[in-house]
Image (cartoon, rainbow, N blue to C red):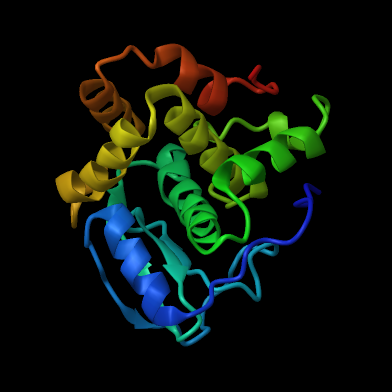
Length: 210
């Protein structure tokens, strides 16, 4: 079983957390009370985030909580299970951004710790998040999904990256989104071909080179 090296950042100071999430993701706020019902992935239990999957509607909400029971989600539905990384990878990366914002560790440090902490023969690299197989949410979807976003950030730069981050929920709010659409948005905003990056991080069952 894949284990996460070190502790994940805690999400403190709800008002500041809400403000930062709105700033990073373009104000797509949806706040509701997390009653604790529903099953979270084993590695996510006890943390302040939310996620749900409905096979009948193929609807995923990613969220990141702020310790007061409120959860923010982008409400972009998935057309197919293979695009689950878009939601769970974003949820994990939102935690990294909050950690970066409050000085608990940068997203680059989170990325570096994961990359160094899992050798090339670890199970983490054997399941590509862009093709996860059966509809079971696994650590690979969360962690490699977030690492994919950070690899995108370091490739296109912060200005383009955060434009992409805000543009994604704005373009697909309350609709469906696919990996192909996300890649197209990233290429449009950055003006770069990103096929090789997404192939390595989403679809290759091996540890990408950095």
